[in-house]
Image 1 (cartoon, rainbow, N blue to C red):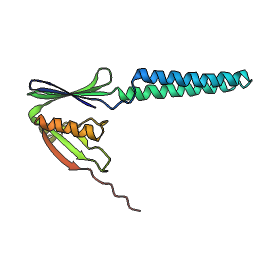
Image 2: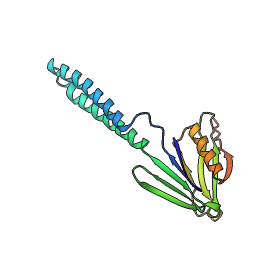
Image 3: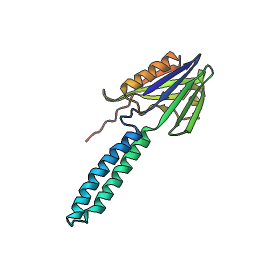
Image 4: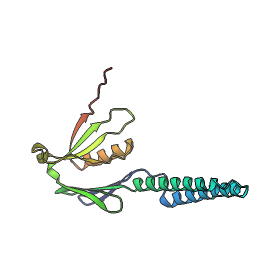
Length: 176
C-alpha cells in the first residue's frame, strides 16, 4: 500500500504491505479457535482421553506464534521523503531501524524488470557518485509491494523528477 503526503515541494511516500486483518482481528480469530479447540479438548478429557490436552495446548501455541509472526512482518513500514535537496528513506516496524539520506541530484532510481509476468519489479535507490567510486550498495525500496503498488511508487518517483534507469533481470541458465 502506498500512501502519498504532499507538503509544498516535499513528497512523503509511506509504503506498507497489504494487510488483510488487523492485530485486533487476529486476536479475535485466535480466541474463536481457542474456544473451539478448548471445547473439543475438554470434551475428550471428560470422556477419559486426557492425553489430548497437551496437544491442544501445543496447537494453540503454534497458531498464536504464527499469527504474531505474520502480524509483525506486516507491520513493516518504509517512509520515503523527497525534498528539494535530499531523498531520505527510513525502514522499520515501530520506529526507524535503518535510514539513508542521499543527495537528490545524485539519486538514480534503478528498476529491474521482473523475470516473470506475475512478478514485481525490483526498485532500488542508487547514489550516482557513490556508485562510480564503489562506496555504497543500492538500497531496495518496497520489496513487499504488489504490482499495482510498485507501479504507483514508480509513478510517484518519476513525478518527483528523480532520474530512472531500467534493466532486465539476468536469467540463470541450467544445463543438464
